[in-house]
Figure (tube, rainbow, N blue to C red):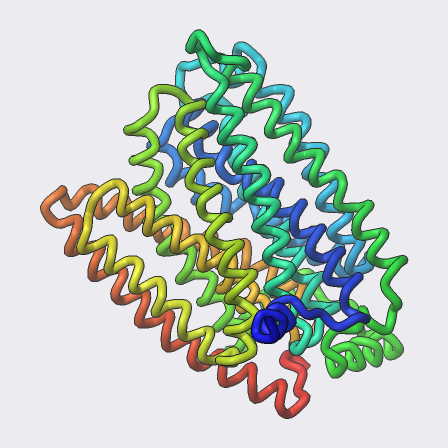
Length: 461
């Protein structure tokens, strides 16, 4: 009994003054990822159903160009509003936009009811671009805000709980969507049409986003200000800059930080390596989903089934493993553990090349990322200045992922052109090179982070 109590205390104990903050952050992330899980999977199935699967690589390239003016506007906004107001602003904007898309997806000529795929159908492209902007302007803004009010010690102890909240949100939304698509369609037992099912879950996603401003307002008013400082050295520096009227930087301040500081470039590379492999596996996964489906609803159902399993495994990892590994192994070892684990999953895929193994490898790869790798990577922003936390990260999350996805899409095209006989050796060599580079960057980043924390340094000073 004593051993069980000790284990419970180790896994779930939160400092009394941190409990409200951790609760509201977990609830906010529940809503963010609950909404994102729905929209992310709908992006693929709806785009393929309206525009066509063969245009997915082109959509990724065009998205990268469209994000530039949006990031410049965001960089200007960072200097004009408070940290929590950024997340309120973007969650409200994306929530309202989602409701508009939910309505127009039911239109018989431009929406899902029209089964004729064409690159000239604008709604499919706009919906894809809308979802692609979600990560850099909602998910990333949440993490930027969380990192700005969390200390390194708080991140090690509590980010596992925050991520557990997101896993519950992901399981709720993916499970509900999985069930909804199971009872929709044209079969005799169907309760909803395919179109109505898509509209319902997209509306639920939008409503989840519109709840975020209320939760954030409660966080700001219920948690004492002294517990919202985060990394004290960075807070004191920002306070001094504010007194000296040096808080504003140029719209390109984020990309300047990315070029000037190797540490920031290292974070960029972590995003790049993950997204590169994610795109390659994701493209193969879409092929499996499309091959086992007869319509858009079937594709969506299969994708949501995979995501439900991903979040369920992620919940176990974040609850039982994330905090324990962070505290026992330290940041550097944990960072190196991520590419090693992913390398193992990919080796499993290369040895057993079947559709079921591909799905399993993808689910494990995503689960480790969401529950372990993501909060670990986010903690690297804690000892940095505001320009890196907010501005540089917007470029990293937008262009680190988009450049990686473009590169991954280019690899998918080349691998497909090489023929079926060369697919296995080409993928094996590609994965081995990426994992090796990922491991080296993780080692260097971890050492720099731990040195900064030990010496009370602020990166970007």
